Image 1 (spheres, rainbow, N blue to C red):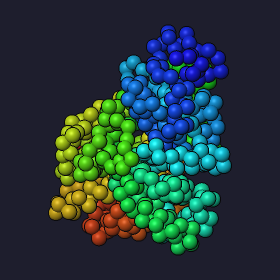
Image 2: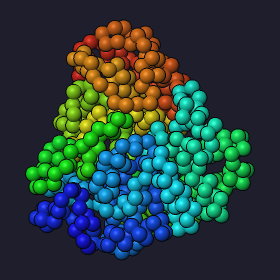
Image 3: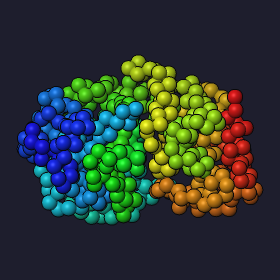
Length: 531
């Protein structure tokens, strides 16, 4: 293959690639691009690091094995600057850096086109692809909030209200855009398609399906679409498999950038977009990776299992997803995120050296393990043990502040599901200590001051203003007066009413201790997290 087909920079880097053992594809990139234009098979929404560092890598793996002959098309609906500043200047290529004791480097070339959904010409390319019978699957990494159409009070967000009135041709939200593209596929002959959510949320495929059909029915009421279109979305021709994905792709780290620069790869510096996306021409990612997908592909699929993907039945996916999202990884991450920010940590692996935080996450894992069902294809205890090793990996520069993003969208899944499982199994919620402490820690984080009483910047969250307004009056060093009780009752946040469930008193007691004074976070952790 020609060197200029993988040239990420403004000059020839052939020597740099050869001298530093940087992997390059063994297929003809230009031929793949042309074939993808003719017969697209896979489109992905969401151009962040999990896509660039894992999903695009899966496609590259299959291309390298000559098992497929088309790449993947990216569609971006939210932060269009990343297309203009990270994808296009580098010919849609990514340098993937795998973080272990030896940094493995690979140039990912499987993204054949990166499209902006606010661009008329790009949208026409997407429409043509959706009308093509060759299209087999559309996947998504749009974060949990991408599937939410309503606020805390169950009212449509303003952008959704506008999209309902604007109709399929003038939509702005990712769900509305997708619904409009599915209308194109319907009009092309009710062609089959699989829509695969790969976001870290429980029953992600069902959330996607609910959002799409909700939008479609609103358009139906406005006479934009027919009854037959609704029937098509609800038929076996349109599948919404659920999935579980697991791979840590931290923010691009300065020390990784410096190492790349030192070997002659310039222009690797990250950018921060106007929408606060921090992204670089490279992706640094851990080595461990899992993707498990329900086998629902009415138009066929690539041989994903040949790239390490588990394709299995619904029950098994649910068990794996529950194991990971509610017990073995995600709740541990959230606990480390909120406490880490308050305690001044900027790396997850550093938190794991703190004996109290280590006991906290081990305790959350053990509490969740009591209600985890063994999915058989992955052993829960072995997976949890591996997670502790992953969290301890000093080569993964993961930032607690990154993980704290959108926590309001996560606590119901990462903690609420386990609490509901305890109730379902008739287990005593009084036996829970570490999960209530993590929830109390989130409220302490929302105060916006660290354990020394200094102001801290909180990560973006769609409900941040609402939550802080609801908690008005709650301050460090001041008496607690029940400020969080209405939030604990909110089933939209936690998935159940924690007051009715009987867990609120323990959470509120812990929060009282956390806000008592400067240093109270550390003191409270020592009280509950000491052997």
